[in-house]
Length: 334
Image (tube, rainbow, N blue to C red; front, side, top):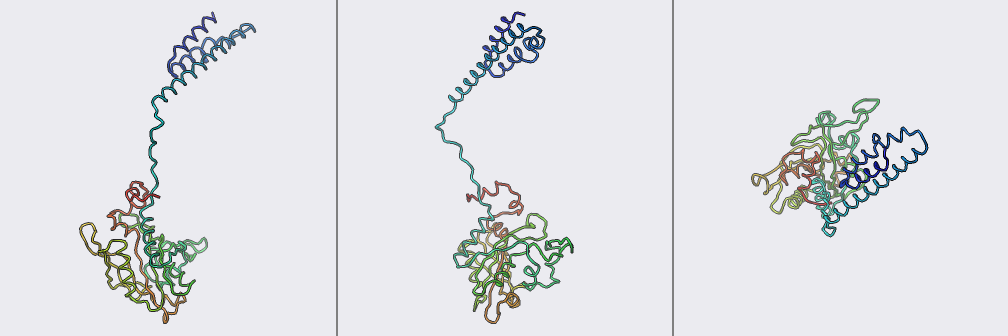
């Protein structure tokens, strides 16, 4: 084998390669495991031949590395010609607040403007705070497993711990009355839990906002005026509320709250929005408030429901499934 001729042919092959792929093929042919040079190195029997073949290998490897660097520089130069570094970059998409968070903050701002305090508390509640303190009888349907998530106890089994995932934010009101003296003006937004299946109009985890006022001389007129202001702030100056007699264990008298919504899909109409009433004297007494000195009102509505009919959302699953296109439609950036 004439190794000088071999080296010249290899160098010519490297020089003629115009792409990284062609250069890699040339390297395999002249310096690869099965190339004549590598086979010769494996079969060498004397020192002089070994030194000569190693000299050829080093020469070819240096030539290959030089040509590889040359091709890389050519590619980079071509990129520099195509890339205009003075052009503006692509805008980054900023995150957006979830529409439920937007509405919650809007509600909080409305009541902060009225002098209320925003209060929230634990989501794992005692049965007493969630039911007993609110005059919900032991045989009330809301206590059954059909409505309530009970926290299991390792010893006593389901429900034996005396704890539940709160079914409403009313326990926050009870804890507020237990820990401070009137006058009390609070709004309690937060996450609540019911044993519902997820569908277009139900979800096992949702959000409520409840309000509580306890002071001297509070009447239904104060409740109605507060709700009218709240409705106009949320739905526009033409919005109004009406009260229909109803029953809730923690208020007496109690009422269903309807909203007159002029911008509703299909035309202006009354829409059921929530519940309200005067705080039941039994609830005041169980929370350490003298009902002979103080009276109060309470109200509550679902934040998801508010979002649905204010913005025409027809499927509650859109709010919880995490599709960023739903959030972007509401436009408020973080």
